[in-house]
Image (tube, rainbow, N blue to C red; front, side, top):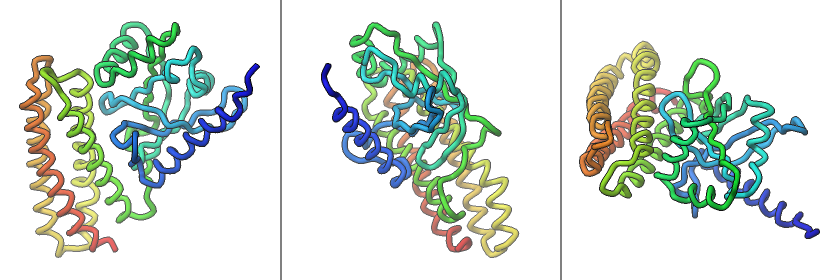
Length: 286
């Protein structure tokens, strides 16, 4: 029987390097994973009861959940993290900017098949993994626990939190633009979901600022009223662009060129908005 201890240790070391870089960069990675959609998934060992953290690829799936795929690179056996979440469905998800508790639910039947087809559409590598193994590769939905907010921000202060959240939107926007640039003659179902998930998150973020952060600052810094008024107006303009993007990607007959143009319009407005907000608000909070 061959001794694969070194291979196992090398794999663990590789994963730990990704985990360390992911946490240090709050979700940003370099090299082969620079444009990958990854989260850190922490499960509880099915037998040991100890926490285990694994970098996994994910699919956006609207505002309520994300999907992860237990491919194990096409291995004949399910990955350990999948067995762990079957035994202990309560997991922890790290997105880079946020950490939250989630409930893991394996998809079945047509729902699983449709989700896996979307994954293959966005990356044919998933199909290659399925071809390598006789097992049906599981797809798992991760539903955020609690009040449905974004989770705990991985920041030590309000100033840092603003920067972290803004950088998360910049990173997500960069991924979306990269994915959109690769769209062919038809806009794929998964790309539409990615766009709509981004829109949902942006809407929630701006709603939170309008109802909590801006009134807080206006009360303590009356001199900020002109800047806050401008930021509120920009929220309205961005909301209109978000609605245009929603319409551009809605339906199977969506035109990729139109969708790309709407993403670029939104990107220009949003990047300028984030920069102005940081310029105006961060000095008030330091």
